[in-house]
Image (cartoon, rainbow, N blue to C red):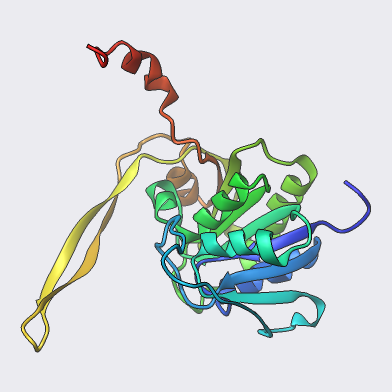
Length: 260
């Protein structure tokens, strides 16, 4: 890498004013030149949605201490933010994209619903090394201080070593004081799921409406999963790929009588 500072794109799904992205910006400014492009409102659970049937707005804003870096508020999804950043705002491909720090877990099955991780995956699709960071605390008053050391360490390693084409990192941080976090573990995604329910209600006009609820079920007993690592007090790091091909099933599928 040249002597110039790395260019780091920062985004999230909780919105540009969320405390988590403020903490992430603070760490990234120690490592490179920062540009922020993030949603103008919360976009949690949007997955990899993109805006195709509406207009997009992206305005430069002043949120907090932006005199040393530029920030842009985008009306779209997290994936939109990465697309518009790379196509319209940045003058060169960033050296890194970081997304988060998310308020809440994106471990195991949550990764497929996550706007945080979809922003990172979108960057990966565009050939940019990317990391999604999430803290296991949904509160807007979450304490991000214990996470900063681990966020910085992981980010420095990605800047130094790079990532394989098509791979991004999904990092989840336990809700613990720094002194109680045991370290960082490289993991696989746990085999877990949501058992979902709908709370059905009726509004004053007589129309039914629904609230999605449910419980998280971890069916994975392995000690190499992200859920296990987090339960033991470790930061979990899962390499994620956006190639969804079930390669292990290709040979079996080719033995089917699909052309008869």
